[in-house]
Image (cartoon, rainbow, N blue to C red; front, side, top):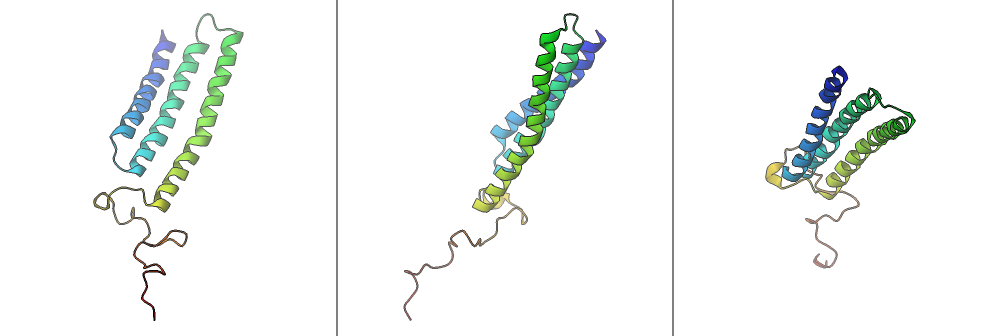
Length: 135
């Protein structure tokens, strides 16, 4: 009974965080807000959910060899999520900044605005060779 309560203390906030990540992804307007909603609460929610599940499984009366394999898979799942989610969030944020996919100008602060010129991107304000007057 006590271990069920302890596992619920981890499972319920974890499930709420994963649910809030899904809602945030659907409701937020800008790319960076969506990346934040996907990476941070979802990773934390997954870790909490797996800790609660491991507590629940290991304290069950019929805990055996097969459940030990399940716990190993859960630990691997958490490790892979902890390794890949921050990298994915960083890459998505970097691509969004490089491509100017942050959102509308009215939603951005001065620090969020992408650079006006990037050497590998065509500058839309600069006339091309064909538009320049000869001379």
